[in-house]
Length: 311
Image (cartoon, helix red, strand yellow):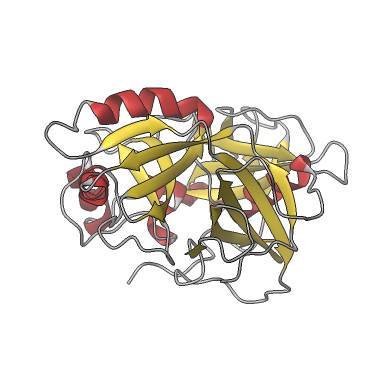
């Protein structure tokens, strides 16, 4: 992956970075997160979930290697303080420090790809540090959306590469259409990783050792008990995170809920969202925002997991 300095960039003030430093940084994160951080390298980042003992995600991180003994974990800013505090409780004698990296800025980048085929796990989360004459930072590739290559640019310097300014509304729209929702304060503690398709995009390694919630996450995987997944939906009505969805087949109980949303930057009134939904509710009938004949929402194709599963 080449760092796309010619791509359009936008600041992401609602994201933050947790700096994990020390000779045990990778080993410590390996014991706490759902993916293999022992194999983290300068060319391949990681998507990882931090779970409670019940297997529910308290946070999600995009991890990159910033230096030989320094890992940056990018996440929504509203979960960082609580998760930093909780992770610190388990440092014990490990040679590692956890610190909010206030000197690191998070930016999103977008570049046209014209890609027609789904990405695989060798493409997403690929990372690259700076080269000669470029800013001091790390780029990491995110899942494509609507034919656009996407990524994060994490930089220590206040200066950014020369690039076109990206509309934050477009970034949010593409983020939703990527189908991968980061965990925020509003959704912390609600979902096992498979409910948001993290197992399909490299966010769960079922071959690694124990981490908080690992037994529950593994059991639901191997026993085939995951009956809910993340889907992209669109509606011509205002939505809010946590809003329930109902199926016309069973209006008594919610069939899912809104996890992440964005307004269409080109068509006023159209909203897209990532929603966690009972898979059975997507196979027949229709989905609505209210009981019975409430406002209808539509599922967006292709569905629902466009990336290759982890080998």
